[in-house]
Image (cartoon, rainbow, N blue to C red; front, side, top):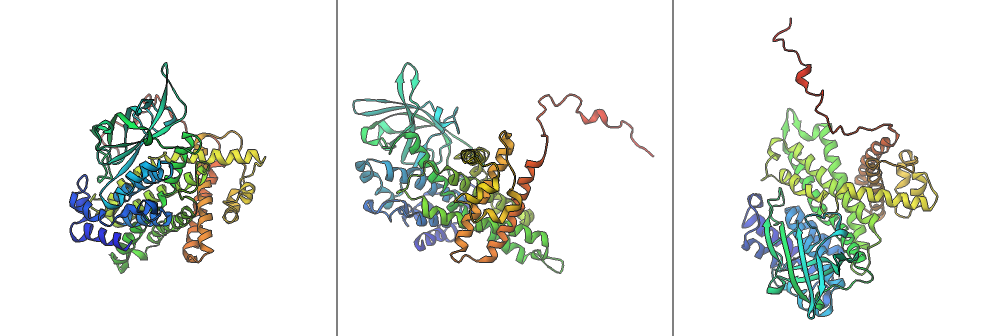
Amino acid sequence: MSRVKSALKKAFHEQHDINELSLVRGLPPEVWKVIMQASPLSVAIPQEFGGRGAVVKECLSLLSAASYESLPLSLTFGINIALFLEPVAKYGDTSLKEKVLPTFTIGHHMGGLMITEPEFGSDALNMKTVYRITEDGYSIKGHKHWQGLTGQANYWLVAARKDLGNGELARDVDFFMTDNSIRQQHIEVESIYSNLGLYMIPYGLNKIDVEVPGNHKLQPESTGIKMMLDILHRSRMQFPGMGMGFIKRMLDEALFHCTNRVVGAGNLLMLDSVQFQLSRIQTAYTLCSGMCARSSEISGIANNLAMEGLEANSMKALVTDLMQESAQLCLQVSGANGYRISHIAGRGIVDSRPFQIFEGSNEMLYTQIAEMVLKQMKRQKETNLYTFFSGFDRTQQSAPRFKEYLGFEPGAIIPQRKLVDLGKIVARVICVEYVLEVAGKGFRKDLVESCLFNMKMDIAHLASNFSLNGRADLIAEYEAKSDWTDFASDTAFHK
């Protein structure tokens, strides 16, 4: 980590200005050279292949150090670690691992994952990319888009479904590794997208028409769908690593600005509303710390996370919401200076926003969280949310802290909008459990108490929605009788 931080300082502060680099797409080759000479991706590679051992704590520390300086750089590392190196290390053929993994420790190599298709985003199980068995291996055809590192990665893991003939595709999903340096495996980039933020990372549309050897197919422990869930859940449990450094940077920048910005007889920190806004960022910092500690315990490649959707979704959805909120608050207290793409807060807003969308939009994940909890409650024949939380192993400590807000019955038939709110409640109660666990190991108490108060505010607000009757509906034909000029006076002046 000392080498990595030194390399980031040299690349982003001594040789170049990260604020200027962030105005253009991509990074100059000389910047990548400085960063990659520190072998940052060695943290995700098992020792037998020349790496440091794929220790989750080290992976998250790398992501945090990178996101403190540049969220796009951290996401670049995250894509490589969670969506390529760890899947290959866990599911790849031994001959494939011996060939590919060492190249990430000694050179500037990158890998990514292709799942999303133009017609199928979160509905990944209906993807149309197909593969057929050939004499030498597999033939794969289809289109993929919005893959981070489009046109930049050396290797790809491509998700596809088996062609069963007669236009039918297998329900299961398989993954294949491609090597862009080999002509038969080269993936054609049809177009590059003008993504709103994350300028460092190229995204685009890819045409898949490749042939790979038999040993390039990943080998699932059971089914391909469970392998995909294991990969995605592990990736979601690494989001706190990217969030950690980013949130800390937002907090440090906001605290520095408010301490040094003089308003009247004092600085901005004398304003109570400003202190509240910064307390929200500190709460995000505290929650993310708990998530990182929990992820370090359970998300290693030795564990199968296919059935750990509740915790994985809770971490991903909540930490990305906290990242966006922290950036918004940092910009708000920074005033007009923050409203520049060259300012860390302004850039942070557009860079953190897609984190709430990719790898499962947060509304979808919160809905799934709520459905998982409701399913468990039904199985236990429990109708009261607090009673369920009190006996659930991942909320036993945290639930009593919010008892007065959780003692309601969600009901059997819940509108989807309220499922989202319920999912937000569940995610907060689960992640506060992580905070209380690190508090028991010595994490500072004042940060914990401030976090608990802010979470009480959030949960009280979300829980109150369940007592509201009625709903606001969309009026599709809204323009009839709604033109305000029909109801405004034509008189120029009234006494």
